[in-house]
Length: 554
Image (cartoon, rainbow, N blue to C red):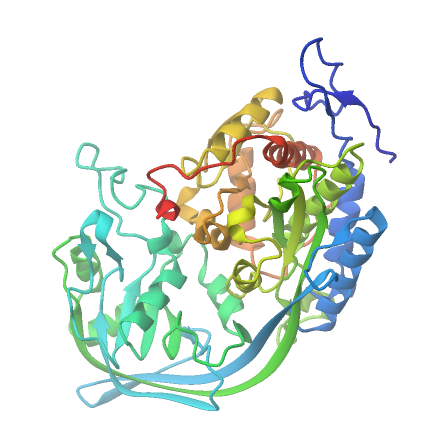
């Protein structure tokens, strides 16, 4: 479809028609062309095809993906965004295959656990063999140290060489005024904070000098089934290549299936549910289980030369072009698992929703920017990251080695999954309330006839689970939209049903494929919003600022 160009106010209505001419006395700006839903779906279908083999880093799938992205950017006329004059930012990774055995001993009785079914464990270290022998198991509640909430699950305990057993999510503290609800003044209430995420917990275990850490998996507080853990961590794992062990992990991090955790506590003569209740108090102290853990991991590894794809549209203002707005989306997924039954196509993790949709969105946003008669004042940078599924590694590497310094980056707009089920009356903003970028989104959504509300599934902790988190940690305000459940022309509960079905049956499985009944109209409207948000900041005088209550302001 040809893109139409017109001079009009940026805040046009989004009935997929261009805005009326601006009134006299108001500055005119270039209106965006229409976003083509058919072309969007073509990108998604290509990236999620069998041919792209699940887009795992360091595989033929990566080669095909980054070549496709470079071709698209070249065709549209975007400049290479990497400082070396290419579209590719090398991201040095190591891919580590761990083959662990695990058992625990109580009163001379040993219990062997089955890898995959009972637990998942791995290492981020390139050692042929890692052994944790006779390590004392210690229950540390939620494993949280949060001074702003006067909360410390560790209480100065000496945990060096021990194995920590932790609960997933934040402490679920009831609201004193409404006991059936969670206290909004503590750990975000029903919203998961960084303290509830697995990466924070492993980082704390490493900080405490623990030899290993096991997070107890429970589906409701984790917000995803155990199969997601198995599929995500039970195969080859990745780390950024470095000269020293990754300080964000103990020697052995892992997950323990919920029923197996209860059996472990019972063997220790303890009640898991009673201790879980005790962990909801500031007075909680680490509880030695009187059980010793033995883990041996035999490891093989390979160096993986993976890549972020970076393209840019230089700013048109001589002074402001040295500042940037970043659009990000991860191109990677989980590749192929040839241990699964069935034909090849049923062994491929196609990653259609997660995140071929986000990559396609960035390509369409780039096309819209290039169709403007004059480029924005500030530079627009597109960063397609690798190894997001392996711990946000591509975004982490870019944040440490940015094409534009993070203090010159005004905003990151991250896209990780699009609404492919139709138009909505509103839009949800993950992390709402953290920065003044919210006001930009609210104003643009209002021009679309939509409202903005906080993420209704904030208990998923989505803000801390995507590439936007690495930009936020680096001090850059972010915009991260989530699918609303309030669909136009659909029965009540339609959106919730779609989200729950995806989370339970498609997310991080071979079932995340392009669906015949997808409706791109909602995705198109969201993409238009994200284009306008970036454009408004690129043209504006004021840069988004963190609000006083945002942890990233510190």
